[in-house]
Image (tube, rainbow, N blue to C red; front, top):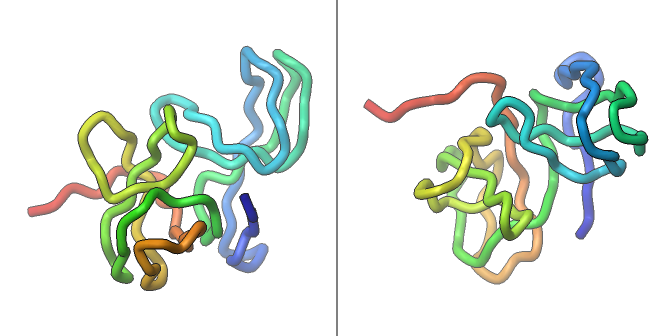
Length: 116
């Protein structure tokens, strides 16, 4: 799994959070129902920094993406997906991604976007 923060420092937003479990750098964790990327490795109950807004490249499920598609975090598979059912909204696809691509580029968003 290649993980890369693609947005600049001024576009990336982070929070400090003390997770109940140990956290590992470049792994996504659900915090209050929102997928966030750990910046560092930290012990359980230690404060760590998590990216909650910004453009990241991360593992994706099979299926093509079109830029602007709503993207969800599948916590069980530890991948981003277009499947809404049972998954947490993460943001939107920042670029098209082929069905067989291992990674996709996602704009993480701090709030849930709902279709109208």
